[in-house]
Length: 309
Image 1 (cartoon, rainbow, N blue to C red):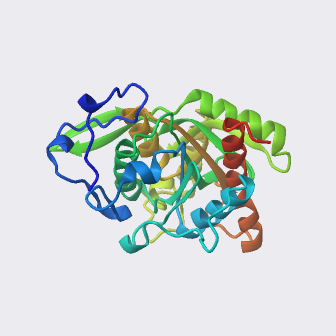
Image 2: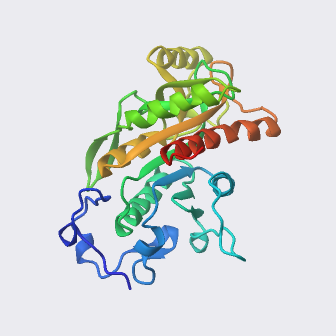
């Protein structure tokens, strides 16, 4: 069994820290939703070299990204070995480790992403990882930008355009600022401008909602108590305030990374322009190509950080 380490056990200046004093009273920490535990595994030995945690919505997307990392970083697995889903037994998330990179699915929406991030942050802590960057690779609805465009988030806001996450804790609302790392965003934009010439790239605010339909002003949900004119007035208003896209995870991602002292970045591809419609009707083969674009950009970022050609 791996001994749980705490701030007093070593100099934590460069390590991922936990903001939870209760962990030190636990004999073991079971990371239930990703099928890992300090009781049965040496998490430090398994994950101490991780520098990048990349996450996206679906297991398939993150499995594909894992294979892309394996190929582009030229990581050679032992003879007879293959990439495996570390969290398969949880039946909730899919996670792969390829050299210094973790590729993991986070599901859809803030609650699913929040559960994963709690356990991934604790994993980084138990593994004594240093200088880790978290990156969300996603899809979104664009606001005033064409489908297929990349959007790099420089500020995440909620459905009221407020740049913080509010959580109800013990019956009281707690707000945490949603802050992403400026250097990460700027580097992603520079790499996109220099090397992603097959698509347009934008940097700006991302509006994160708790719902795909009414919360994003769609007219095609099971319920709709507003008019088409009211929808367009709202979308044009948020566009005028610098919102480039809408999705459902960036606010919690930014707030939790910032609260943990971890550098975070978000890059998404727009599947449509919401000023032109609500439904995603792009042919699947085109969407597959579009969804590769955030993966390609994040991989360029990783290679740049590792000083790889």
